[in-house]
Length: 154
Image (cartoon, rainbow, N blue to C red; front, side, top):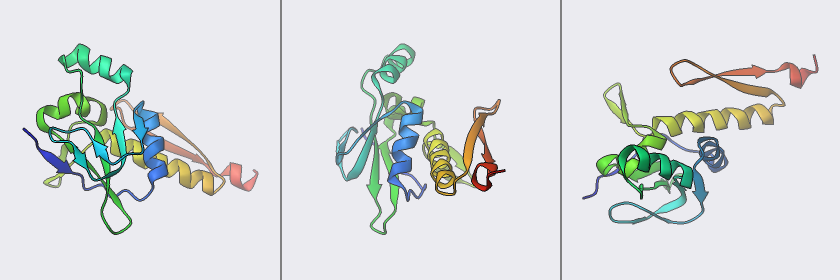
C-alpha cells in the first residue's frame, strides 16, 4: 500500500537541503528514483537514512528498509518534499519527524524542516559575514544566536 504525500515547505536552496541532511546524519544522493511502496522517479535529490539510523530504526521498530525522502521540482524554481508515509515510512518518520498540524494544515517532516531553515540561516549569515550558532532548547528545537560583530569588526 502507498500513501504518497507532498510537503508544503517551499525549498529554494538545494545546498541548504544538503546541509540539513548532513546535520541530521542522513545521506544525500543525486538521483531521481526514491524508495516508496511503488518507487517514485520525480526527484532531483534523494535523502536516505544512514546505516546508523537504520540500525536505530531496526532496534525500535524491527524495520530494516525505511522509505526515502524525495526532493521534487515544482516547476517554478522551487522544490517540495515527497515521501510515502504508509506505516510511518517504515521508520523514515523517526528521522525526519512525524507530520504535525498547524492551522489545520498538515506539515510534513518537521524535524527536516527545522534543520533546513537552520541551514538557510547559516548560509545567509555566512554571506553577510556574520557568525551564527544554534542553542538546543529543552523541547528539542534550536534557537539561533547571530554575532554581527564578526562583520563589523567590533
